[in-house]
Length: 123
Image 1 (tube, one colour):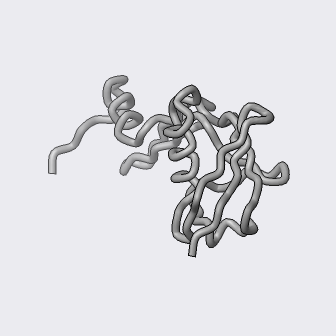
Image 2: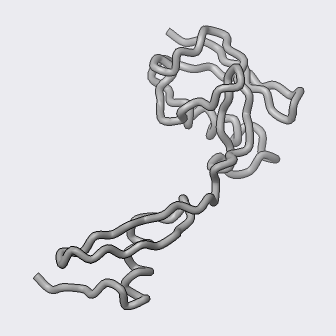
């Protein structure tokens, strides 16, 4: 069973997208950015409904959105924010580093190894 969701962007422009109960909200954002090339990368956007940020990992079924909901496409305000990562070593020492929230775990560990704060161990 499919339904239609209306996504509002740039304050007044709208696009209707057909959805299924298993479709995630992230998929809606990606489809929206494909239909409107001027928007660019889908990772730069989030969704709001009634001034509430929606979790993009949820499916339509679990998002509690009504049929025919009007959702707003908004810039992601958390993109590039700094977060503190703490790594505890087997010796009990802890290493703290501030990184951007878009960094992967591999990038964080590699940067710590390059700084000489973490030593590779052979097993």
